[in-house]
Amino acid sequence: MNGHSSRIRTHAPTGLGVLGLLLVMCSAAQAGQLRVFTAKSIITMDESLPRANAVAVADGGIVAVGTLESMASWLVSRDHVVDTRFSEKILVPGLIENHLHPFLGAMLLNTYWITPHEWNLPGWRIPQTRGRAAYLARLNEAQRELADPADPLITWGYHEFWHGSITRPDLDAVSADRPIIVWQRSFHEVIANTAGLRWLGIDPNSPSPHDEVDVAKGRFSERGLFVALGPIGAHLLAPVPLNSGLAKLRDIIRRGGITTICDMGVGGYLGFEKESAIQKAAFDNDDTPFRVVLVPATIDADPAGGISALADAYDSYASLATDKVRIGRHVKLLADGAFFAQYMRMNPPGYIDGHQGKWLTEPAGLLRLAREFWERGYQIHVHVNGDEGLDVVLDTLADLLERKPRFDHRFTLHHVGYSTNDQLRRAAILDVVVSAQPYYLWALGDAYARYGLGYDRASQISRIGGMVRNGIPVSLHSDFTMAPAAPLTLAWVAVNRVTADGTLMAPEERISAEQALRAITIDAAFALRMENEIGSIVAGKRADFTVLEEDPLEIEPSGLKDIPIWGTVYEGRVYPID
Image (cartoon, rainbow, N blue to C red; front, side):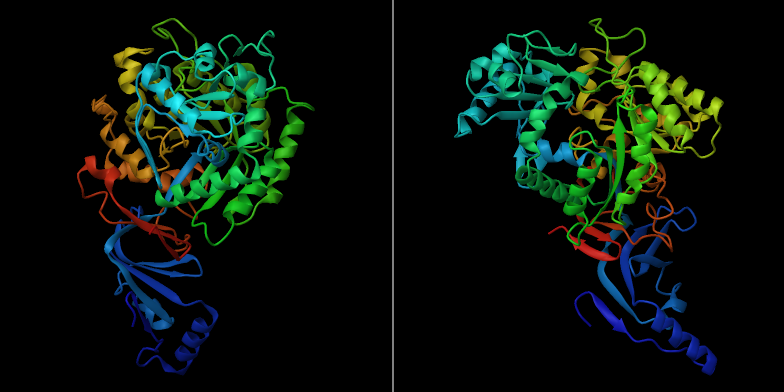
């Protein structure tokens, strides 16, 4: 007996007989030892057995769920250990984050953060900064902290609604010599000073190299960002900062109680093959208590060699997979622009100031891409944010279904920042799946009520209640760094719909704690076609659990985000956070 477990030898039941004894001995010899975790309560997310207090694990998988009494036949037949370390804790299925970007996260974790909202990361607290003067003061402070005047200052978190208008001349006033790159909160836009333009390889006195680059203001937005991304990536994705950033990200994911992540957009930085190799080196080891699913992405509807050649390349990526770094028949496409930058495409009445959103992929090009991958049997995931964007994406799906009907296609909408109830009803008829971003409401609801959308539409950002009402399978994601990689925080927003300023918005769109828990477990697994392996605590699935100090279905909903996470169990192996 030790502090957590007791070893129990295998004994044949009385009266079993010689043949039975031989069968038991043979079974025990062929199978691994059982480890039975007991807990105060186990929330299984299985409707047939919603609660248990014991789960038996062997060889990384779940063998039995229930009570010690209900699994007696297993225990008398197999050598086993009863592990009691979780006897006062709550087990839930390992939490799933089905949309984030490890390379994006690794890059930004090596920049200087100046953000309108507070962030708490492992070993790093970022206070909120609001107001133009306060932002510029922080920027000046940051550039003074850099010893080498030639080192670029790359900062993330700027947002005009909280920090005022910042353009190239403002950054030149901070430093005329040091390259300064201001990365907008959305990641979809950067602003550079004159030295920064030169560092990016752009003559500050030349005409614009792209219609979404404003050289005079130093601004690169949406597709124009790719003009700047090469030099920035070469700096932040060099081996030392990249490995440092990925190590920081691994710690953040682990502390979020996450046991499966999906990189929803591989290939945009270093190419799919290189990025997959780097992620294998970083995560395919015993120190990493989560698996990774890699999904390639494109916005190029006219690639060199044509779309068919692009799809052929995607077909070949499956050979690069391992058990821990998965590559399935998934592809991500992108419709309209960033929600944090108000580049999403909105139907009438549009934006208050009359500006228009942007397309990342024009509708005709999106349709061409979608048709190619649909014909090849891929599950298609689409980044879409505004209601005009959503109309285009639903029209695209309707076209695909008319041309070639498919059952269980799981065409998945990602983000869905603003949608109408009528659109969600149509989406349900088309059998879509949604991976929603609830944090938009928390971070942007109050600001977008004042600027851009007006109160009625801003209050209905992330209409997750409507998705659930229409029977759409819904999961929640962070798109880190758009939101913390903390599924319980995302669930808390969806359940409470209270903004950063404390405003309750569209309470009719709240979902229950149980629905939110489904959205970060079994329904998140469904969106990745992995529900046969993960997402619920059921015999035959992987032994992935998140260990909580409180019961998320018993506490007040306002406390969901504050539940302490003790650690995780990944394929039967215990990983305490501390």
